[in-house]
Length: 254
Ligand code: 13P
Image (cartoon, rainbow, N blue to C red; front, side, top):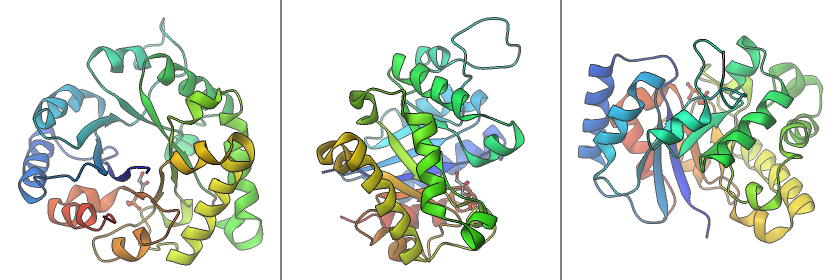
């Protein structure tokens, strides 16, 4: 059975003092995570080790990076390599978030290189995909997302694909308060899973958690997570509030 996951993406928010309080409150509100569930918190680089220490004694809690660089090492001032994340014990990394694709012009080739580097260093990538509003309104969203998967995943071996977490985050739903309806989300998740089945077989496709992201809140999480191909959420804004995020954790199906 694939894991159900509540993942927080703090993005570029919170001082460490605020972040530390948030994690402590979260642990108080959700002290016991069932073994079928995972809580993953993606924090800014400077907080990674400190955050990892805070959750070290909490089964089911994990810390993730929000990005890594697409080169292994070298003269790339200001960048952080997957090997560096691994060297401080980090086991998860978001790859290909739409904000990075847009603001840092990350290309599918760079994302493919990041995925390879994550796997080289035993880091589970949380690979993001999702269509912009123009495609949702006038195009073919599942075709668009399928090409995002083809473009960045094709270079991976099946054993690597089997280790992935995928997050479907429609860009028009991110930070807008506009959520995909549970039906729209399920339809896209099923399209993603169908692609994985065609390309890698049913056993691998059935094992890959596919998270939904885009204005997930305590009040809509249960309806979204109730769908058969939605295995939890990748949560931005609502993850900055302990009560909201604890409600989202509590909404993961048993
Ligand atoms: P919001 O939950 O703020 O819409 O952000 C979603 C997201 O981008 C998570 O990675």
